[in-house]
Length: 125
Image (cartoon, rainbow, N blue to C red; front, top):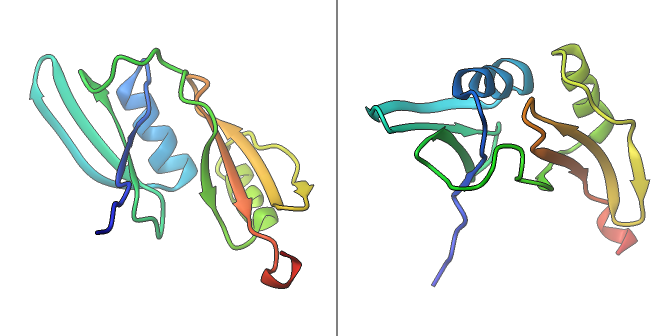
């Protein structure tokens, strides 16, 4: 039986600002934006090529805005991904080279943090 992680909540203070950041700056796809009721808004966004999405909104999670730390996305080229973020106005760290991969770090306007990881070549394991 497969168990597939498909949706991760990201707590934010301003849903529209966060949606703009993730879609227009980071480059996620906007899948859904439904205002179910005054207390419930569901915004689903997916990183390019990912099977797992994030959800922003109101009435989605009890986590404090900015408390989601260390979400990680695998990319083919950490340096190229960093340059793409910078060109879109996203503050990103320098490339951090580790034996287990090359990493670039950034955060959203609320302080939720992300890591982009370029996996090391298979022959280096």
